[in-house]
Length: 345
Image (cartoon, rainbow, N blue to C red; front, side):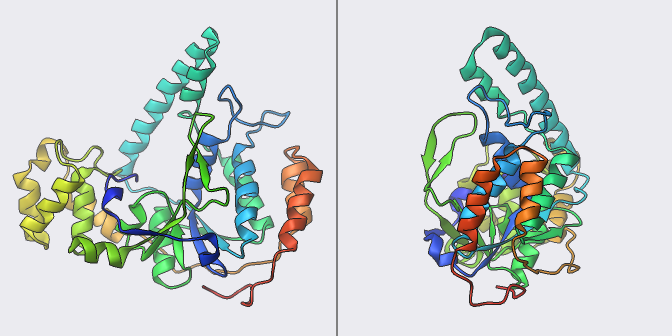
C-alpha cells in the first residue's frame, strides 16, 4: 500500500539474533518486486538464464533468505489473492507508470546512457505467473511455508501474527499496522546495508521492530484513527489522499475530531473528501478494517530438499551448482532449533 505514515511509527533497533527461533511472515509479492527492482545488471537489465527467463527474484530469494535461515529464523510467505475493486485503479496507475518507464528506458538505451537505463529499468518490474510459480517451488524446496491469501497479502500476514502463529511481519512500510499486525520487522539484512533501486550504491540499515501497541500508545490514538490518518494522506485505495494534508496534520485532525464513524464523517466532509474521490470514505475504511482473511492454513516447516533446490535453480535456470551447494552445506551446518519444525512461534 505504501502509506505515508511511517514517520509516525515507534520503532527500536534489534539484532538478527533477537529473532533466533522466531517465525516471521513475508508478503511474498512485496519481496519479489523488491528483488526485481534491485538485483540487475550494470545497465539496469534483469538477470536471466540463457533461455531468457528472469532469475533476479530467485537470486534474491535464495541468497538472502538462506543467510537469514542460518540464524534460525523461519519464514512464512503469503501470496496475494484477489485485490479489492478500489485497488484496481492503483494497479492501472502503476501499469501506466511502468509503460512510461519502458519507453524512457528504450530511449536511454538508444543513446547508450547507462545511468538513465538503470534509473528507468528499476521502474519496469513485472511478475509473471511463471516467475511466481518458480518462486513458490524454491520456497517449498527450502522447507519454508506458503500461505495463499484470499485478498491482500499484508492483511493475511497481520492475521497470522495476531493469531500468534508467527512472531512478526516483515515489511518496509506501515501497511501491516493498518491491518492490525502487532509487530513489524524492518531492514532485516545480514550485511547491514540495502541496495538502492536502480543504483550501484547502498544504504546503511539496521534491523528495527515496530510495535502497533507502542505506536498507538505514543500517538495517543486508537486503531481506527490510525486508519483514518492513512486515508487522509493516501492509500492504494484513495491515491494521493487529500491535498495539503501530511502525516503531522492528519494526526492533529484525528485528535481534534475524535474517534467513531460520526466524527470521521464530519472530518472527511469538512476537508472535502468528495472533491478528490467519487466514492465514500467509508468504502476505503471498510476495505482496510475488514479485508478478507482465512484461517485455512497450516504453518509447517520441513527439511531443506537439496536436490529440489538444485533442480529449480541449476537445472531449470542455470545457477552455479557449486555455489548453490556451498550455500546449502552452510545452511545444514547451522545450529538446530530447540523447537520442533512444525511448531508455531
